[in-house]
Length: 155
Ligand code: THU
Ligand code: ZN
Image 1 (cartoon, helix red, strand yellow):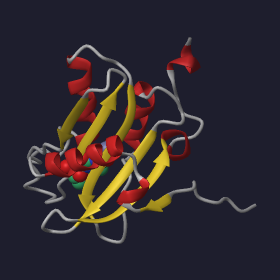
Image 2 (cartoon, helix red, strand yellow):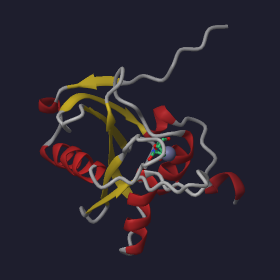
Image 3 (cartoon, rainbow, N blue to C red):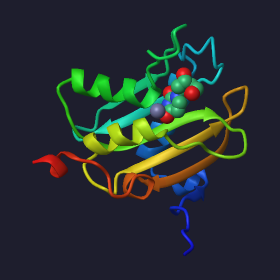
Image 4 (cartoon, rainbow, N blue to C red):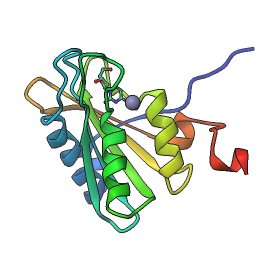
């Protein structure tokens, strides 16, 4: 049996809405604040919550390697601290190597828990060394993380 990977779209900035482009800009800006002295892989994230507020995050590494905060998790924690628990869209920006990089598995679990639905859009932005946008990919959280482990599984 053959399994195909989840669909992902490569898009242009002009394909995105004004709000989605704002998220992209915020993720790229947040990436500049990343503290990644060990991996040198800087990540920035920006999410839109259901009150239409933007929360940003960046990765923060520590020498033990295990306490690292991922950019997406940092942005979600900021949203929670503001008193909101649902996000409508999330952009993540990293250095474009071969193409855009979507959130890791740990972040997919956390995003799914706080996403309004399976259709919540994830925008992966690849930038060059000077933070210029090189490539953008989009997918829904449902495509990135199908058959998720959610609170519905345990209630
Ligand atoms: N990283 C993120 O911030 N988000 C992801 O989803 C992928 C990985 C960070 C963690 C670590 O600081 C660096 O990227 C390399 O893994
Ligand atoms: Zn992650």
